[in-house]
Image 1 (tube, rainbow, N blue to C red):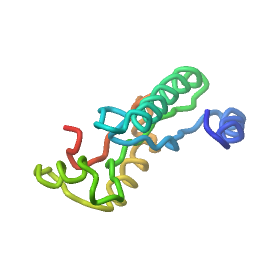
Image 2 (image 1 turned 180 degrees about the vertical axis):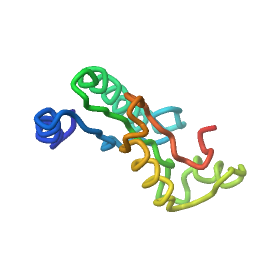
Image 3 (image 1 turned 60 degrees about the vertical axis):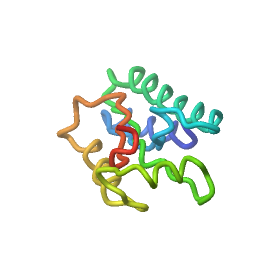
Image 4 (image 1 turned 30 degrees about the vertical axis):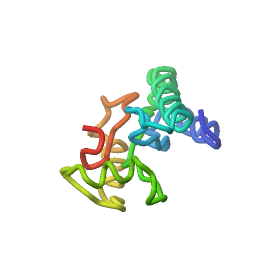
Amino acid sequence: MTEGSDGEIELMLRHGGGAIVKNASSGAGVKGFKGQAAYAATKHGLIGLTKSAALHYAAQGIRINAISPRHHRQRDDAPLHRRHRRRPRRRDRAGADRPVAAAVLGLSSHEAAFTIGHAMVVDGGQTA
């Protein structure tokens, strides 16, 4: 699935299952961004990989999901960055570590046992 996952999956198979929320996509995985076709293609691909692997391992008790945190570029001169600064969002956090961590914990919990192959977007409304 991804580098290092084979060992994790083998361990989970020996222990009867588990949850993987390792795949980090971004808003570009659920929406396109002008001038970023290659980046968006890799993020869309990661979500496809997550969904396919989730279907492959679900019957064996392994749940695989993805997180798509806020799409953030470091360059201040990027047109995307300027456009999003002008548009109000429900949340505007440059480093939304806690909400992303909470989403990972939630998807990893037993309460999310029926959530399989999901790409959870945690971006404060950027892709809404």
